[in-house]
Image (cartoon, rainbow, N blue to C red):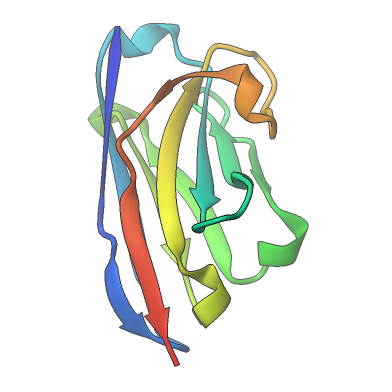
Length: 124
């Protein structure tokens, strides 16, 4: 099994930055891609970004390109989400997830392990 723990969330003013971390433990060698999703109250779960462990191929949601960046440190079994120029509409619970699909999937159905989430709140 794989355990995922997100951290780095908090309260930040609009225009500020946060870096989220997702530490993976357990049988991580079977992982091929990691993704970030977010969900605000009453809204659908939304794809944010994903990265492939081995080659580092990344994909960021079109609406977030230029502000959000995903990266990983294979040695630390950790993925990061750098969020810049945050907006109030970025407020959500951010989840880290693991996929065993070779591609860099954007659908949550391709992910089989999830973290508990970390709250990001952006004030105006």
